[in-house]
Length: 184
Image 1 (cartoon, helix red, strand yellow):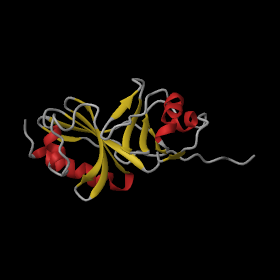
Image 2 (image 1 turned 120 degrees about the vertical axis):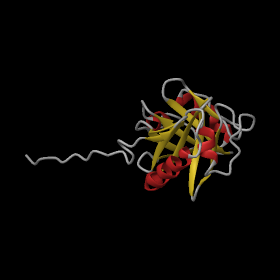
Image 3 (image 1 turned 45 degrees about the horizontal axis):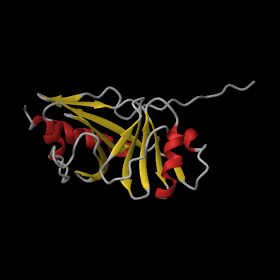
């Protein structure tokens, strides 16, 4: 019988730590990610399959409290992030027209937290991340430095920055340098 080789994915930021006084940078836990496209009329069936209500308003997100999160990216587009389950499998049960593409291999995330988290992000991002404009639960696709990212505000001083794996070193270095200037 032939030996079977198994590949193990190494997270691109594994072991990295960063930050400064008032700001912590941490690679996010591995997660399954799905790019979901569907008409708004099919959102209810897809929400039922996912076990959370898909957000229908710009710059919003929703969570099921069990590690699954959905971010609104456009009128017919959501990013689904799940650290515990497989959203693609659940979406396969929905009997409505939709496109669900596994992008787990493409993305990774950096958690930015602490009293200086917002200032750290704003140093490289033109998006208004103020408390009034970007409340807890907000989500947006924007740019940071020279790369496209999705930023989610997960707590009062907590943000999740989703980026392509190939840009993760750049994103982490940019945030690390910005954190040095954002002393609490």
